[in-house]
Amino acid sequence: MIRKLSETAPKGQLIGYARVSTDGQDFAAQVERLKAAGCYKVYSEKESGAKRDREQLQAALEYVREGDTFVCVKADRIARSTKDFLDIIDRLTKKGVGLKVLDQPELSGEGPTAEMLRTILAAVSQFELSLIRDRMSEGRKRAKSAGVVFGRPKKIDAKAAKTVRTLKNDEKLSIPEISIRTGLSVASVYRALRV
Picture 1 (cartoon, rainbow, N blue to C red):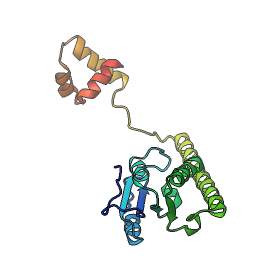
Picture 2: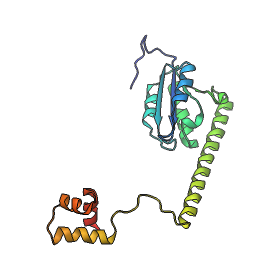
Picture 3: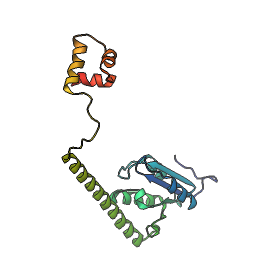
Picture 4: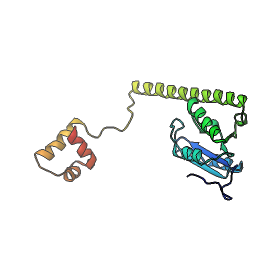
């Protein structure tokens, strides 16, 4: 949404952004804090911070105008990589928009000290994300070596595929009839025919 400055949407607004990574999480507490901080409008979404083109983040960045302040609860809500974080800060700066981080006030404001702290914090955040990915990878390797199978189990084994092909080719049954006879979904029957 592109904003035209008017009496109902004046210059100098606080515009909030809230984000959580998964459906199991809730951004309500962030939204509440942003509204309590005086945000005129709050954009929120459930998306991974590693994803660069988040719809609501892009909408918030498009909405802000010179003199506004972009507000978030923590810096890692904006980005999880140093490059993305600094790119967003640069984009805000070029538009004449300030940054306010509620839980990290030292990142708010302008000047070389704030810029240095932002760079350090973004690097630490990216490092933390790398550690999480490494731990997850190690956990998967250990689980696989212990015999744990990841993903959905295959419904179509070689025997089921042979049965489906026999019903199709020899008995000339239709896909829906094969589905009823075998108890497989129509999509599984099609997959079996491709095996």
